[in-house]
View 1 (cartoon, rainbow, N blue to C red):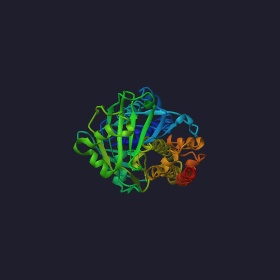
View 2 (view 1 turned 90 degrees about the vertical axis):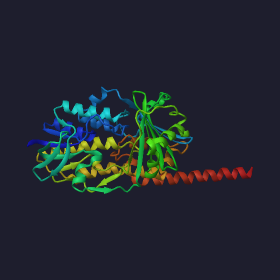
View 3 (view 1 turned 45 degrees about the vertical axis):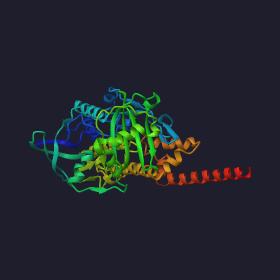
View 4 (view 1 turned 30 degrees about the vertical axis):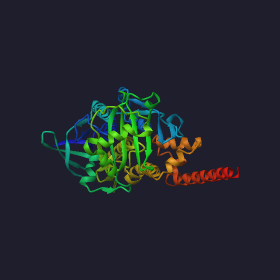
Amino acid sequence: MQTVDVVVIGAGPAGTVAASYLKKQGYEVTILEKEKFPRFQIGESLLPCCMEHLDESGLLDAVKERNFQKKTGAAFMRGEKRCEFFFSEQFTKGWTWTWQVKRADFDSTLAEATRAKGVDVNFECEVLKVTCSAEKQHVEYQDADGNVHEIESRFIIDSSGYGRVLPRLFDLSKPSAFSPRGAIFSHLEDKNRTEKASNNIFVHSFDNNKSWIWAIPFSDGSTSVGIVGDKEKITEMAENGGEAYKTFIREFADLNGRFKDADLKFEPKHILGYSIGVKKMYGEGFVLSGNSTEFLDPIFSSGVTFATASGLLSAKMTHKHLQGEAVDWETEYEKVIQQGINVFRSYVSGWYSGDFQTIVFTPHINEDIKNQICSVLAGYVWDQSNPFVKKHDTILPTLAKVIKIKERSIGDVASSESSAQ
């Protein structure tokens, strides 16, 4: 029977940030990861806010050494309409750049750096059973050879991502309010990439805002290209080895032939129905972080930021708890993480309703408004001094309505003047 202070389930960004922070505080930490690294994962475009979490947990320097593709902004397009955001021009004072990463390399870097700090990182270890109590947590897991082990800890942080170990074992999952969607994606050669295209994620909206394409460039000259849409559309695109996906990205007009002759690095992969929620983010002896809490939608690349934010905060609250201090998990953890999730939920809803596009594609967008929206896109969704954070649930539909009324009035005036002539 192995005994440690904290067991972390999952070696992704949430788990490694949590484990590294706790190791800095002097705790004995063990990570149990079901998969073997390196392994493929989506969520390849980071947000500037997560740089703070990597820095505080002591992992930033290890990532810097990898020379990943620098990301300085995001570009949204629909037909002839285009709006670029640059993180150097945002409202909130914070990081003005981040990276675009192949997650296999990024996650392995974090795991290796965490292990180098003295954390016991175990791959190909599947958690089978968990028993929690106020003082002692008991975990049974199976290693790659089929051997079953037991480990006891004072606390558990579940950072198992899509595996959602404790939500599954403790019946904590709940359905998402969003319509079921899916994504199909691959990595492609990108010989037609411009220098400007290297520093941004490009998002192309189509199908009346119901579907969109991402293009995420990497430092090795390849680019991640994915299509997001309803489950039926993605299922059709995935048939016959993804032939419909390949044809679409090579012929889609708004890509201007960027991938018309591009070779795929691997056959297209797809996932369906990824949006999911959770009934509660904590319980006696455990806390959830990363995608084990809630996953909304990939449109604004918020996944890794929520992983690192919740990983860091869960570690801080765990440290406080293990020091014998009272922790109000509802107020100090769940409500804080939920605040960020709720902000991005409003923006995801605004994307698919078309309100977000109405605002960013309006001619001569107000610079103050653009900078405030840019901070949300940079991941600073806890900055209550930003009106587009504080009033997130009403500001997008209200502003979009005002813009539509104004544009309609301008159109009516122009029509009247034309008739008079």
